[in-house]
Structure formats: structure tokens, C-alpha cells
Image (cartoon, rainbow, N blue to C red; front, top):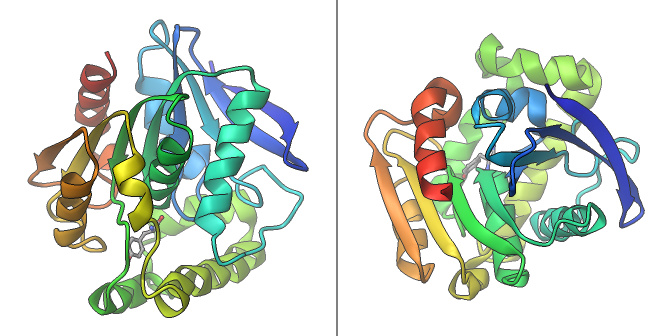
Length: 254
Ligand code: TYC
């Protein structure tokens, strides 16, 4: 059974989706414009409800954490990380593991580095700590939502309606690009050595958006880090191969 709840902190009524009544608290962090419906249904429904208390947070302006409509400060991923930590604190949950996908994995790294006392374990996939010129070129392949497969696009349209989705996807493309243009591509490189918890990278070898240099760099610079290669995995490996992914996640969390 999924519960839909709200909690107020940092000036926003944050929406989150909750599943399970286990002792191990797990925070799910979605990717760009993501929330439970688009990014994490197989985890909310598939992870062991007796072992985990799963919280999937909608970042401000995403999913059902509206109002406010999303705005885009330069350090928008840093803001999401501090918001996520504030939501967990407001829920009176002080020890939790973090599963973060793509932008959510970046948020997870920043969170784990900034709040080492709160984060038990960190699992990330499809993430990067910096942006190269080549990444900016790959990134052009997703900036026009009309070129997405309907299977990827429709859930976002369902959550947001056409106009907010199109407006905010453009804004996200611009904001992500600002890390490249205004910070020399640095998203969160300085956070990596400060991640104190045990970390697992699931490396989708065939991820067309995230070239191999990124997981390799994360693996090298995060102190207690293991990496599992997934030969057939692309960007959305946790959706496409959800059972195998959930098994791997549970093995790591236990
Ligand atoms: N981080 C993006 C997301 O959350 C995906 C992405 C990865 C985009 C790498 C560009 O260079 C990139 N969906």
C-alpha cells in the first residue's frame, strides 16, 4: 500500500510517497523533474515492505510538491539535497539509506557528504559529478521532448500536463547547462571525499547519457565505494530490470 503524504519544511509543503513499515528507512531521490510515478514505482512496490520504510520525496516544484512552481538557482541540486535532509529531519527520521538516480544520485552524494551522521548507505546510478563538453553534446539528445519515446514522455505529461512539463524541461536543460557554463562543469566534485558512508555505484555500461568516465571517477573519489557493472544496463536500468535491481539494492542495504 502506497501512502501519499505532505510535510512542511524549508517553507514548502513537500509531498512524499511512503511504503512499508520496516526498521530500515530508505530515501528515494528522483531524477530531473522526477517523482514517484515517473521514477520509482517498481521500487515502492517491489522492495521488501517488512524490512524497509521507504520515502520517495518530490523535490520542490516537482511531482506533487507544488506550489511552489519550480525555480532554478545555480546550485539547484545542492538545494534539493538540503531540502531532502530537512524533510527527513521533519519526519523525525535521523538515520536512513539513500537511493538516488541520475540528478537524484547527485543530490544523494551532496546529502551524504553534508550530513554524514544521518546517511547509513548510499546507492547511486546514472550520475556524474561534473559535466564535460562531450556530455553537453550527448545532453542535446534529450533537450527536445518531442524526440523522446512516448513511453518516457507520457508519465511526465500525466504528472504535469503538457505546458508545465515543456516549460520546466526547458528550464531544467538550461539550469543543468549552467553548471557547465558557470562552474566549469563542476557539479559536486568537492563533495566526493566527504562521503563517509558505504556507497554502491550501479554502473549501466550502455547508459547513453553518462559515459564511463563518470562512474569511474565517482568510484575513484568516493572513499568507501564499490561498483557493480551492469553490462546491459542503460540509464533507466532500475525500471527496465526492476527485479534484478531491487535484489541488488536489498543485498547492499542489508
Ligand atoms: N541527470 C539527468 C536526469 O536526472 C540525466 C542526464 C545525465 C542528463 C547526464 C545529462 O549529461 C547528462 N535525468
